[in-house]
Image (tube, rainbow, N blue to C red; front, top):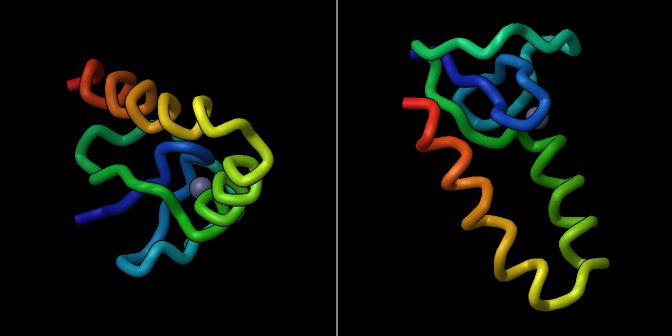
Length: 69
Ligand SMILES: [Zn+2]
């Protein structure tokens, strides 16, 4: 099973390490998640945002992902 970061579209391995620095077109066969790089970036940004934005953002991302199936 391939894994792909839903944020930067890079393929990653099972522990979230990006396998390449080049984004690839979204693969429906791959399971989508967040690579470590995007996870860290998101965490940094989330810490700078207000409390309400942190609460709503994951819901928006979930809706976006599920609508593609
Ligand atoms: Zn990523």
